[in-house]
Length: 623
Image (cartoon, rainbow, N blue to C red; front, side, top):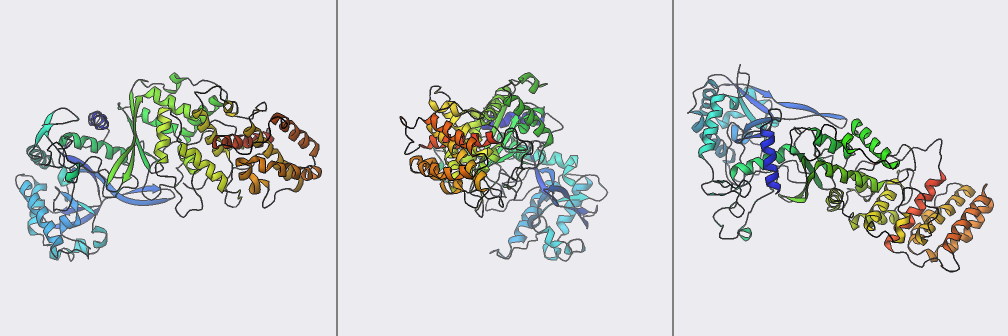
């Protein structure tokens, strides 16, 4: 189903002249240099083909993305490409010192020369004749001393190169006659085995090796495989004659799905992929209208593209997306329903939409999740996720809606040398969002563990219990108990304080917040207050802690400026517990501990309503 959906999307993009998607027989490659040739095949110059792009605060140069004749998938053999290859094949130049074969570079240049001459000598055009003449006269042993090459060898080593005829507007591989020769070659070559393609149903040459996918976060930079069989143990039904015959996909279908995925993973895709944990999320609609993907991107806080080396950085702000999210958040907070017709203005709500999560697995790519729905249902599920997360904010300048990356960040050990969330957690979270299933239990446990382990630290900007963590606990419990409306925990899974709730865990959380308030009013901020000393124990085994805290509170109340009001509030909360008939529990379950945290958070937030001068929220460290 995944390959069929990608194949259909390739047909949609191929019909759109603005998409830039390469046609069958071509691919997009990063090219760094063009060898400028005279009509006689002399190397006149080396043209730099770098693009400048913004990476955070820096501007860097990257190889220009160019459509070239389809690149082969290399294994251990010598397989040249047509008119675009790296310096080892095109020039026989390498800086490898560990090559066991002394003829490592020469053998590859020879293969490149013979393959290209065989095709080009059938073409009667000036660009083709120039390249043919160059390949015939060029000597790899003298290449490093040529005037056009010697001053930039270090940059050329390993880079992809193409050819250009001096005075010609395009590259040699763009010449119409050269393209015709290449396409005729592709039409007459391929796997000799014909079979029925599982994707299209057509009888066609079956691909033995499928193209590689690049820019999947964490996968090999040279590319990783989504579909393939590399050992006889994975072959079955007497399909031992070729690696691709076990699950036959035609060469054209394999090209189509890999081309689309590489496009979705590339910078040419104007709606970049989302990186959540170790999962790279790509998405598309069965339409040429990019408004579908723009809206979906904005629902997750704007563009959160993956770039090599910055996977843990906080994404750049996207103002239009933030405004859209803010409008959704305001409507949810007021209990207003969202007008889907207004949100999907100009879009067909029934257009099929796809979301695919990919994760690295050595030289392979594994599918974390794949989900498809009519677009309106997809949007409704994302909005429902944000509605479940709604909780009163501590400070006015906190985000209205909490992004999936922020959710994962709250599970991370900040002191780690390489702070990252659990590998499978990101995919499980995104799957829950798209299916409205209960959130993963591992998410709840991870947040509870961080609350137990961490302490408030103003210098580091960390807080034991904050807006995001409280929202996560509330959302997880809400989905877990949604189908159990009579369960007592339901009454505390609200956006703000529920003063009528008699759930012991929730009431004790409220009580702890008031006791902490009494200490702060009595002696101000201290290095280790009752939250640092007792919160974890009070949350898990309240009967062993609260008698001590209640005795201690009498000293704080006697010193506090508003001791009487605090004393009355403590008494009112204790009355909800009905201590004589329902003593303080000896232990709280994991779910009750979440209710305890919510009670504490709700009560603390209630202390500061209204607040005229909110304190600045702590900065979110880079993910």
